[in-house]
Image 1 (tube, rainbow, N blue to C red):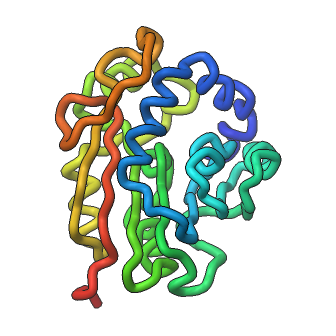
Image 2: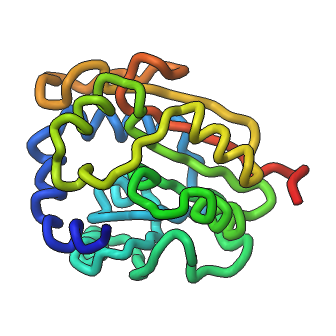
Length: 210
C-alpha cells in the first residue's frame, strides 16, 4: 500500500487544496475530541495535513515521500508501520489514526500497538470514511487510486475492534453531509453517526483489560 502513496503523494496532498471545505470540516470534527496540550502520535500521518494544524508533534508513516512533506510541516516523523510502532510503552497521552485504518493490513494489531504506546489515561482518536455512508459507497464505486485496495469499516465495526483491543468510553462526531466537491463552507460537526460520511471516534484506554 505504501507504494501507492509514494507514487501519488503529490496528488494525495493536492486533494486537500481542491476540497478545502471538506478538509476543514474534517479538521473541525477531529478538534471536537482532541486533548489539549498533551503528547500525541498520529499513526499514518501521511503528509501531515492533520497532525500539523492539530498540534500532533509525532507521527509514523510507511511512505518516504509523504514523510518528507510531513517533516517540512513541522511533524517529527519516523518511517514505519502501525503494526510495529518504534516507541516505548506508555509513551503518549493520545494516538490518532485518521483515514488510515482502511489501508492497514491488520487493524487489530495496529490498535493493539496504539494501546501499548498510550499511558494509563490515554485516548485514541480515529477518523474513518463510514463504509455504510454515501461517501463510502461513492469512493468504492469511483475506484480512486488510493481507495482501490482500501477496506472501509462501519462505525460499529471500528467500535467492536476497539473493544476487542482494550478501549472503552466512546464518543462520536460526524461531518461531510454532501459530496466534498460540492461543499461551499465549513460544516459544523454533529454528535453521533449515521448521516455524515466522515466519522470521528474517541475512546479511552480501558483499565480493565488484560
